[in-house]
Length: 323
Image (cartoon, rainbow, N blue to C red):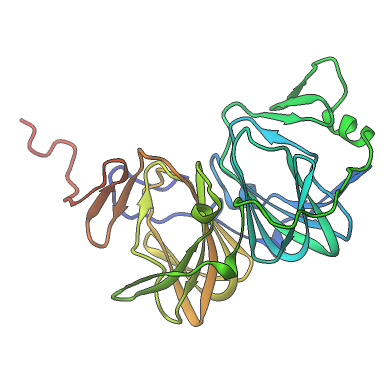
């Protein structure tokens, strides 16, 4: 992500390869392993994420594309784009529908999702894993990156398939706090100058810890937030509706429904969205890192989030004031 960039905080021109993708141009992979059925797009890889992940799953009525699993050190956030179904968590089920956000904390409940009668279209965000350890309780096996345990056993997905159909009890009468609906959250307004947007913080509402996700609506012709880039946090944006412009460094690029924008940490290239005549709605997902430093090139400000300090700075040459 640093190709074409020079040292310092100077704006630079970049190639959009590894920055921007459209889900209509990303191949679907068919999942067909006994009870595991559905289709998957690897949107994060297509857009050029560094450590985080984003996949899109489509399932027809009754299909389940993912095994029952638990991540050792990765947090997962699901956002339902369309349809309805069930969130299966530790042998209990909960109804989910379009606009719902489901948070699965690291090393928490075993989980998967199952499509209802109208099918299910879901985005799955992952905070990234250093250990790359995933527990599959029905398979009684661990994924360990490209390997698995028991090391002399079959592929865990074969064991998951051999376990047969997943039992689906009747949905619980109420949902856990880790499932929230976008429509019930009151928006927080961000208005100053040419910035005019409303943010619904789904991640905070659902109790996420390692990552966050907001549903953002930008007024026609307005900007999403101040022009900025992150030193430690990774961000992914998904355009849900409308059209507008991605301001990226000194370049501008058209975006519309289906575009995915990856902003790995440490690129030194600031970003901002500008809505078109009909406004722009997007999901803004990001990791949370107390060591993050945010640079605002338009105002020459730096934010040191971990200690709650913002200051205005002047970029200098490395040797300025030396000798």
